[in-house]
Image (tube, rainbow, N blue to C red; front, side):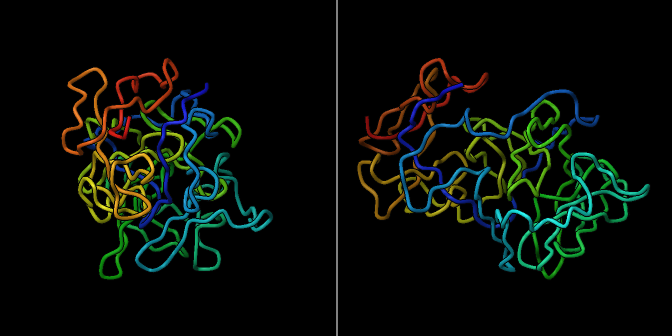
Length: 293
């Protein structure tokens, strides 16, 4: 599937790992179905060039307050202690991503299953080095936050299938971030409905609209550096497609092509389709963005 060059820049993710709470905490009751979600970016808009831009499934970098990173690392770094798709750990254990060097999630290992929290339910996490949590055997704690030394998050299903053909339940996707180290099913969303859990926004993350932690809640027209710097409902777009911008990128609203399609909040812009004509993924035909016509 091909999509239009959307006149938009996609920027590096910041803060906690790419992950999200289920829209409105509307989690699936069962585990992964046979709904296939490919991780390549053939369905993603081509972006305007930028020194900061990158697609979310190639070299996405994610930082936390402890300066931990989700990075692509280097080929051959994995110890291959276990396969996150096969979940081939001994009984009573599960295969999870962890930070082998203490800096980023760059490998997998078997850890004991220590709880029974299911997908979509809150969880506690013992940090990226230990990587243990209180999620059940089918899920791992992601959508992580750290406060006062304590890590919390939400349980996410493991992707099924294989790296070439990852599978997740309907309403989720397997972005395979950090060179495939993080193989977890992430809830997708609608950028106009902003149907994510509290403290999250629906952002374009390179191949899908996904729920991601908000950071600075920068308003319309404000300069931004990362896609989730902006308030939910806004896109961090390249300054070249905006009438004015005090930095390389600024926040601009999404708009409804089938609704009022108004962009009055940012004078000098019009509602332009986010995807090329007839190339929008099902359910996203209505998505536009306010940029210069």
